[in-house]
Length: 118
Image (cartoon, rainbow, N blue to C red; front, side):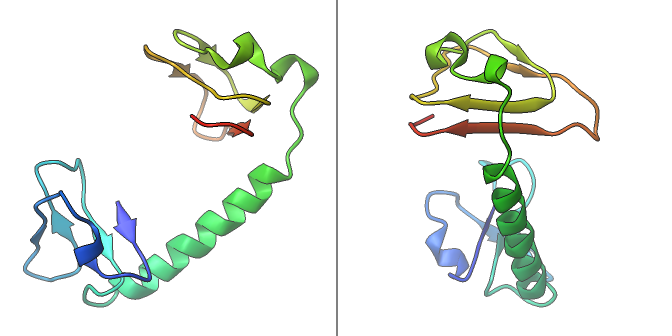
């Protein structure tokens, strides 16, 4: 988890403990590490790169067109479904109360677009 351009204090409720290098924090509530723009270098530059990469990915995903067979699947009630690589789009909320499975390889792309809530 990471926040930028705001400080680590914006991540409330996680009981963060800074690493001795002050480049990241840990918490029993997070699997992995927490990062913030006010941590020691190289974290700020890595946060900037991560945000740029996220913006590029979002723009790419937003421009992809879904196959008609991948539109409005099960009216957005997708509990128990398995998804293979592709672009999926809903003109409604998307809801699931049990697991969903995303099945593919490390080079596959999965894009889920909705005009509603998840």
